Length: 134
Image (cartoon, rainbow, N blue to C red; front, side, top):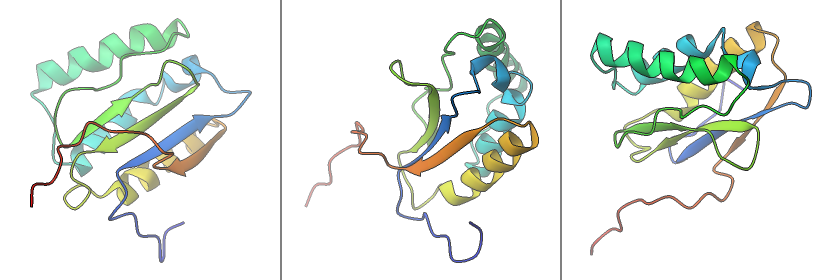
């Protein structure tokens, strides 16, 4: 995973929960997952806002419900799709945000918590990226 792994051009990295893992299993590590990704993306909000975002997500996770994630317009978003048990980090500027580092950090946190998961990249997700003008 580490050496030779280049995601500089990727725009998303997906963490698909295994059949024996559920949203509630993410609750203990969710704060670290979100903080780690935001630090890597150099996008950490004010402490009060971060605490509120974490708590809102934890309220859902602890009740085994799909949480909101972190969907503000910024360098990255953390999205929990409606139709499947996964979350992904989406980058609007993969040249600035190192999704490879986010992948490694989140992988370590999930594995350390004993959560079963698979990781994929891009997964044919359509993003609302601004079109390039020539």
